[in-house]
Image 1 (cartoon, one colour):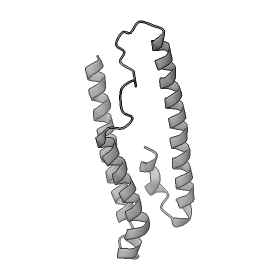
Image 2 (cartoon, helix red, strand yellow; image 1 turned 90 degrees about the horizontal axis):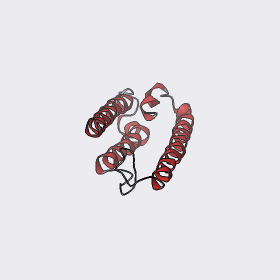
Image 3 (cartoon, one colour; image 1 turned 60 degrees about the vertical axis):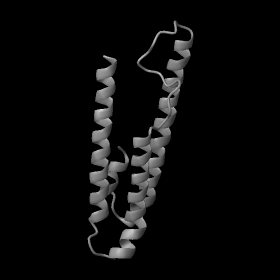
Image 4 (cartoon, helix red, strand yellow; image 1 turned 180 degrees about the vertical axis):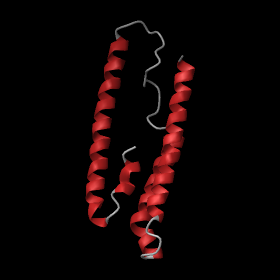
Length: 123
């Protein structure tokens, strides 16, 4: 979600700010989610071993669709920062921004459908 805002900061001098914001956002989310799910896991250990809708035990952190999506984000970043200026020069400066926006839109759609599927299955 944070990466989808990168086209708003499109100048080269803003790149360090973008990377710093992305890393800060990822670190805060990682610590918050890991703390939240470790508390849920600890509270479930003391209760009955009933099936819970929120559990990370026995599951992988990222599935293959997420790994492919994150790899695509890395490829788009490499394209936008290194390959596009080398291949096109000053022509079509909007193309990397457009690619980031469209790719993130597909990622957000996937995320929404994944969450909707989980909600429907657990209800």
